[in-house]
Image (cartoon, rainbow, N blue to C red; front, side):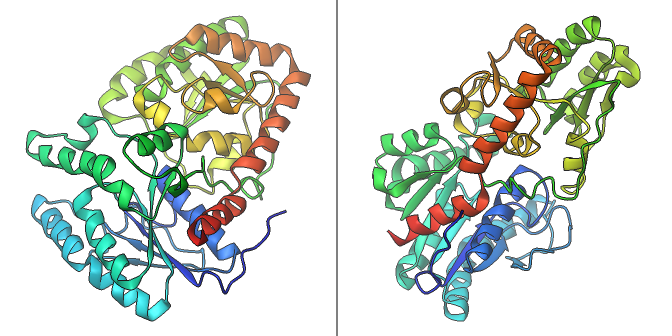
Length: 398
């Protein structure tokens, strides 16, 4: 049972996000559940989208959300530059207006990674005596930060924030021990660091969705970004072995193949015909029903810095179905779980181990059911959004 935080201690929390709100992909899911957790604890909450809307979903959360400047994401380089300069210059004004209007006690930054964006928040928070908390979800590859040469200065400000300025924040919420250790190495006081793997509505995720498995089929499910670094090609390779032994096996891929890899992806699944089903991007309300048509769910993520630094959203959602889950040993997954208890663990970059794990679950239905139930219980204890937002509130108050 979650104990609610007394309302008089924290009046309100203001969340600034570079993603959309309330729906979209993994970043939007985290911010939505974070905001809903604060709402559950009766904390006045407001979300500001620094870069406007991306998906245009209706806001049915009952939580106030506004766009900082533009109503939707800008496309031209000129408007992007105007937006960036406006955010830098107008951030203090935004903080002051919301502080005097709503009396927020803390500001949480999600997806705000660069020093030149964070410093104006820091100044405004010092003047209003408001706490500034940054959520660090990942450590991005250079190619992600610098897709073209003229964006090279961004890398300097990205590293400067981590290595020189995070120590001056009031708190760092890390999604992994890797990011927490990285903060400590860069001088952040351990008392200012809180590790929370994720914020998942474990009990409500599948509410309204019923199990719809085909008794004559064995469906293997994947949900997420359909891209090579997430292990999608290893999963297809593993499925080939499973399908050879069990012709009633199917592979369901929930997501849209990455454009740059689409040709390779299509060539790999073409020999399977209708046995491999690709849904394309589904809405948040459609995903639970699709997952519940499966018998097992797989997180085949490859080994990488990104895999070590973050905790996959899909894993929390997988557990919420109470279906058995197979995952590669990456990041904190290596230390959180006991193999064959809450999850089936396999080595990354190894299709043979993935296929062996799937075949084991096909041939051991009773053990498969136990693993699924244990995974759900683990997620409820460690990932539930109500309990984890309570941890953040306690963290703010310390």
